[in-house]
Length: 73
View 1 (tube, one colour):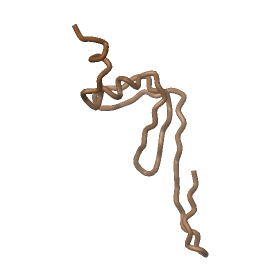
View 2 (view 1 turned 60 degrees about the vertical axis):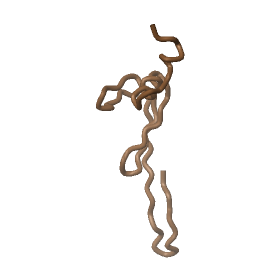
View 3 (view 1 turned 30 degrees about the vertical axis):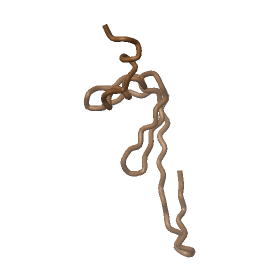
View 4 (view 1 turned 180 degrees about the vertical axis):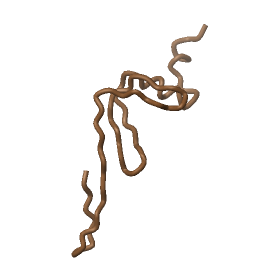
């Protein structure tokens, strides 16, 4: 029989995901996109079901006159 400490231990990467069930998580995607939401479920392919999700898209533009970066969220 496993002790409580062994059940909570993170031994594999998916263990960390399992411990994050019903918690708010942050997911960084390609193309400077981010998702923040509550993790309801996932599978071995890391398909996720999130609730109360906020999507954030960050774009960086260069000002034609000053050549400064303009970051927009």
